[in-house]
Image 1 (tube, one colour):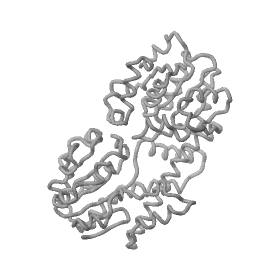
Image 2 (cartoon, rainbow, N blue to C red):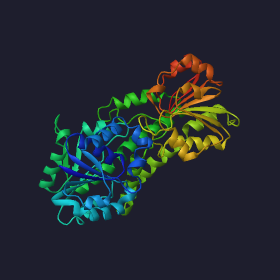
Image 3 (cartoon, rainbow, N blue to C red):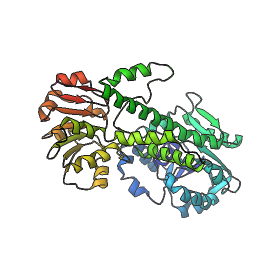
Image 4 (cartoon, one colour):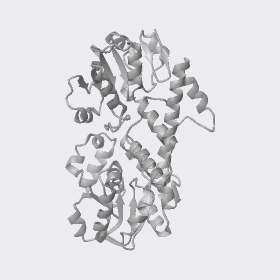
Length: 429
């Protein structure tokens, strides 16, 4: 098929790489806010496993080409599919772009709306298509695993009210639907709401577990016992039941705000969602509060090492990441920060600049601990899971490890001679 992809989101880049890889002739029109030269240098794209290599491969082989709006209009062959993957704040631009690019579509073409827009937006887009059909395909990519989740999907959530459009989308994605049936079809509005509801439920589980971890701290209970007991209940399970120092990320956070907007627009107010978001913002300060408590508020002149800035392992993004809240709190108390992250340092510097209380590291994590009083683990990169414990203990002047993701065994850390403070867990030497 001839496919026109519009957008500069991760979903657009992944679709461009994957669809051209399996033989479709793909033209990619990035959004004006981020053209290809800037995208090709962005940390979030270059750090995404497999993706940049696949994009360059498609461009080199000719199955993928980059386009401008004028080139779309002048194309010799019309497109069978328009794939729309833009950010929520580009919704008005997208609607105008769809109408502008419609001349490049063949009769009976399908618009695949892979963007997270308000419920009902796919139907509105279809009114601009002059007889072509529009479907909603929920963006279920996992950042840090985008190529894998697109090419080996657990499911495609398809909002579609037309059998012919469903057939065309199935043919478009047939190469990724061989292992088992992964399509789940429902009406377009239902699919749009389901996408938002999924992230709302995941966020609720995380925030509830973080609330329980706070209670466990107060009662002197190890929250890991509670987590295992809850997860063993078949009605609950273990997924998204890990307490931590707060979640972030562009898609997750935006989807929650979009769900709140949908609630508000419908005349319904969600007190539950408000609480979920409040708990998460409060949790981003939890490592700072533990540091404050350990040193009885005397933080001036201290140095803290932080491992991890990205909002999750496998990405260079720091959108709404806990580290931003943590840095502001530490600097307000005059604490010097030695920050290590294998991928997200450029994003941090772009956000906070060359701060006098910040020193950054990208190679050996232990270098960040030299001269530090304490270590905070914020992002659970695999390189942090098994440090040289004797050396780490020697480097930390106050022998304090604050584990924001509960990846370490408290008893082991204590046996190494350090004070351990996790999320609902603690141990002393």
